Length: 509
Ligand SMILES: [Zn+2]
Image 1 (tube, rainbow, N blue to C red):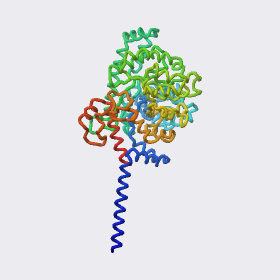
Image 2 (image 1 turned 120 degrees about the horizontal axis):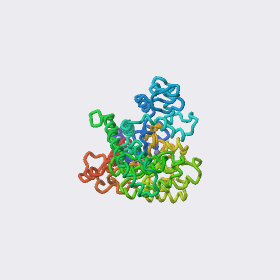
Image 3 (image 1 turned 135 degrees about the vertical axis):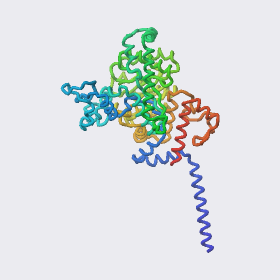
Image 4 (image 1 turned 90 degrees about the vertical axis):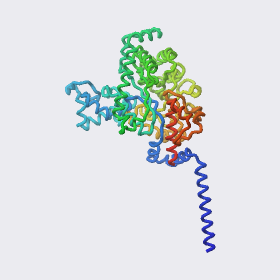
């Protein structure tokens, strides 16, 4: 009996000690470290990693072309509804009436013709692009001309589709690039023509229809948002998750069109963003390696350098360095990112893939870190369009020199990817850990163009502002001062929401 009692006592005390030490070790390890430990334990198991990353909170997607975010299958449906025709050779949409003798058929016929349907999906996206006979670059950029007509009058439906996907990927925020005026601004630029003196050029555009075109663009955004909210049943008891995603817009300037139209569009972006807080800035888009963007690159930067001081509050992100060795002559690789930063007033750079080919590249990295210029990193896009992946990608160089970086999807519909897949690539191809992924999610909201002050007094170390320093993200109630700070600042409010999501996510492991 005594022996048994003693043994039980020893066993109980052992249990108490081991429970205590387990509790101590659990509390000694932060939820973030536990989550890191779990991710490291499954990083070789891709299916488990996929499940983990799809649940992970991701903050915002800052590099997103609206029409490129929509899946080909959706576009085929819209083309069928609009009674558009499709050229059976090129798979490009053309306006009705359809004419089989001229080589086109009703797009709707694809719905009953599996061969035409699958050819259209392949031609309008990166699905099976390797069998297209084209390079990834050419196949990618050609998709937009092929499905382009299908998107007419569907901006609101596009917003709904991409918001829904963002919500399901655990994103809170999107900045969507699109040209909201549907070409009216470019038409004003064409009609005004090129004027060498930028001041006169601006005044002439403003006196000849540019403000009206800008207003028309803003009205289009009103209409699109109404349609989005109707599609997602926002404000009703059946509201879809997409309703919770905050969307802002970046005016998309087509840098491959003639310079007078590019000038007009840059001006329109600045005007639109000054008049309406939903439009937060502008960006220059289209293949950077094409003749006009290469030829006019420095001119475009000079235009921005002239106009930007007149609109100091408007934000600028620029596609720069979406290039690779061999795609353009070597001297074309040496200056785009630097000029975008130094003359183009870019607060963020889209892609920045050829950064190490730039003149004095290490100094450039240091300069970007010093100026706090963030790079929007698009791993899938860089892989399929430029063939740059794995160790050849400059992400590790940006991280080494302290340049802020965040992952984005670029064109998730055309690329048939999503934000979770970008996170997976960051782990598998770029060898990033959980803490680095979390930093990128936080960085996305820190560098978002949404208005309002930050939750962070230090946006690198992520130290909170004093007002909210003692509040707990998991807590039900916040201090009055923190609550009013969050109400007053949209950015901080989104950032707090992200912290809440992280607190919940990290409590699981
Ligand atoms: Zn892009």
